[in-house]
Length: 247
Image (cartoon, rainbow, N blue to C red; front, side):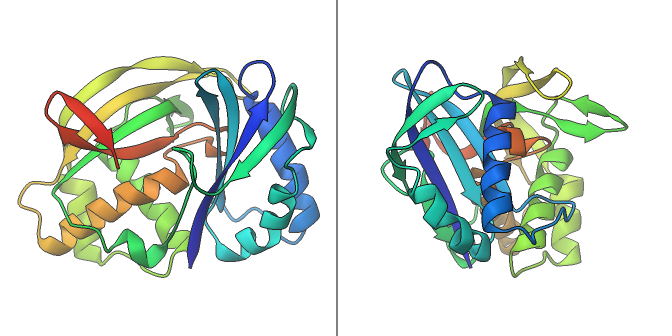
């Protein structure tokens, strides 16, 4: 079962607008996969940003059938004019060769080395729906519950109950550095951007394996609410002294 993140390299002024990007993608989705209905969890996540001043937009697909239906339309955008809140020209559509492009499988998520530490960097405002309001703090339970829910919705595996309890009840924060940043949604809110190192004390090998797999999954699924607007963009990083390297 394949997971894919495609990046549209754009020409235009500034990054795409969240609502415009979502509207454009929903139009593509309706044309390519009209029978796809709201299932509570979106089988995709969007993203946007600037790299060296060059705008880009990202479509991450969490189901292989969705990739099969949408990839012809997405790759066919190369050279086309699109409107993502403002007009852009698509210079290229990348499956590799960009920091936010990539392809893996659900099985490969569990093939990397297990670790009781999960360093995550949140690149776009990340927040959670909690008691009727948007909550901007990346608490361990909220982050891991979000990732588990999406992985189990679209992947072939479900966490054993004892692993789930360990992840959600015992994971703590070893390091946190960040700030809040405005997020434009239907109602403007704020979300967290920055780095967090999560730690699961006395983790068994199976618990550590699941924690590490969820970190790899975050690159594709996003974290928290409004990932369909490009929020919750996150990825694991490897600590190397005072600096860090993305994995």
